[in-house]
Every structure is written in structure tokens, then in C-alpha cells.
Length: 339
Ligand SMILES: Nc1ncnc2c1ncn2[C@@H]1O[C@H](COP(=O)(O)OP(=O)(O)OP(=O)(O)O)[C@@H](O)[C@H]1O
Image 1: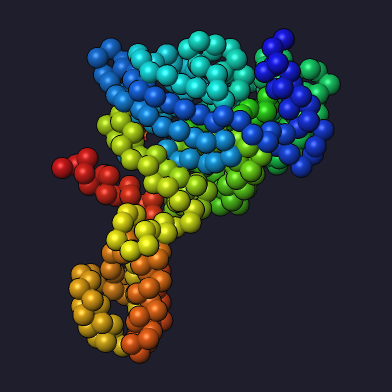
Image 2: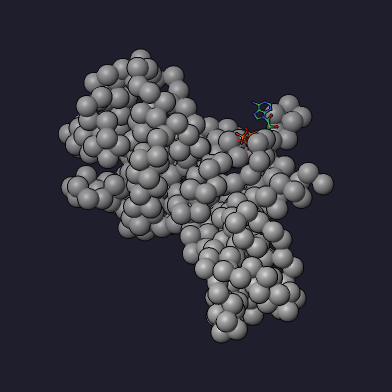
């Protein structure tokens, strides 16, 4: 047994002993991806992927249909071999030591898959067995995870009778059975009702708080704004951009001019006065539903503008982002890829 294995075992045992912790991890090396390419008989699904997911963070993988997100996640999960490129999972090179790399990685595909004839409990125990979690510990771990995803009452029902959302929750528990340092999730919120989505968000944030590196693909951009710390944008098989500070809403540079930019919607009791005040500042204005939209360079620029308008006696009654930061970045990306 290597010292890394011993650390891992200690971390697992720690986690199993502390009911409050989902993994028991406190730190790790996260995920590093460099120059990954993957094609299928001439069809290039992932052309050039470069990204990092620091331990303790949630990173969103965002891009239009066919951008290569699922293919990339399958490569990172060790289920598809890349044509070239390097993947480091918690410091372990996936190509050099796939077994150790997979032991550090949790994978939640967008569908539960072929084990649906087992009950949820059997499925989780089989997974724990496959990962070499000792029996007594596995029993405790499985109970904890069933509670975490609120499936205790359905634990002994065959997975195939579960609803789509319940299967998604079981899929999350399955991905966590071996206390992974890196968690990869493909559209985890699909099929979840609003309450389950909030719980998923809380669970992923909690995992990140425990030091796990979380990479999550999703099309529900408004929810990623609240869930993710940062987002990696993918288009045409390439990682094309990174949006930092997603959760903070994009603070922007001190001069208020740098990215990220997005429209803000303003409403005043006197719309004409507001229109004139914005025009005086050289800000192009668009009529939006229920207000005027102006593009600003971040929250600092917005705060400054609001203070100026109020000081000038403009009776502003609403001032908020017109779209989420990620939504805006995604729409810009989509626009560029259509040109
Ligand atoms: N097994 C395969 N054989 C051939 N082409 C494939 C295969 N898997 C994926 N592709 C192609 O690779 C490209 C990327 O597909 P992928 O499923 O990774 O995209 P995605 O970003 O996950 O899309 P979506 O958001 O619609 O799920 C697509 O053009 C797809 O048709």
C-alpha cells in the first residue's frame, strides 16, 4: 500500500465516522486537463480541451448542444481514451495510473445506466465493493448516502421503478460511495423537481466546502449562477473561455470597463429623466421588458452608476442584472459560434 493509499483510506475512515461530512476530505489537487482531444472515426468531438478545477471549487462546463461536454466528461471519468492530452485527477495521471485515478474520481452520468435491476441499496453496496470499501464501513456509508439523497424509503426498491429524479439522486449517491476527490457530473439537475435541485446545489456546495473539486455540466444556466464559482465555456470541441467569480455576479474591474459585461435593467418613476441621465453618460440604452437595459462592466460599475443617478435626483426604483452572468456569456458564445 502506498502512502497515498493510506492517506486515502484514512480520509475515507474519517469521512465515515463524521456524519456531517459527505467525503471527509479537506484538500486535494483538483483536476487539471491539458490539450485533450477525442474523435470518433473522423468526427472530432473534443478538439482541444484545457481546463482546471481547483479543489474546493465548483466549476460549470457550459456550451451549446454538440459542443463536446459529454465526450470530455467521459474522457475525464476514464471511460473514453483521449487521442492525446493529459488528465490529472487529484494529482494522478489518468493515462499512467488509471486505477488510482479512477479511485479518486466520482462520475455521475446523465442516466443511471444498466444496473437498474438492482435495488438502490444493492447498487451502492456493489459500487462500494468494486472500490474496495471494507464491508462494515460500506454499510454505514451506503446508509449515510441514502439519507443524503433522501432515498431511505426507496432503498430496497429496484432502481428501474424509480422516477427519473429519484434515479438522478441515486446516481449522485453512487458517484460518492468511495469519497472521491474529484466529482464529475453530466446534467445532474435534469429530471429533478425544484426542491431536489436546491438540495443538489447545497450538496455540491458542501462537497466543495470539504475540498472536493466539482465539475458539472448543465444547460440550466440560471441555476449554475448560484451553484458554480467559475465556468468553463466549450464550443466546437474547444474550451474557449473561463468566467471567474460566477457566484459573486461578476464584480468587474475598478475602472468598471473590463469584462465581464452584461446588461442591467433599470426602472425609474420618471422614465424620461432616467433615459436622459443615461444618454448624458454616453450609455447606449435598449428598451427592455419593464425597464431600460444598459450594458455595464461589472458590479462596481453598476454601484457607481446607481450612486450617481440617485445623487442627480433620478427616482430609480429597480436596478438589477437583466440576465445571469453565465447566461450572458453563453449567449455571446452562441452568437460567435453561429457567425
Ligand atoms: N460515439 C460517437 N460517435 C460519433 N460521434 C459522436 C459520438 N459521441 C459524440 N459524438 C459527436 O461529438 C460531438 C460532441 O458530442 P457531445 O455529446 O460530447 O456534446 P455535448 O456538448 O455533450 O452535447 P449536448 O449538450 O447536446 O449533450 C457531437 O457532434 C456528436 O455527434
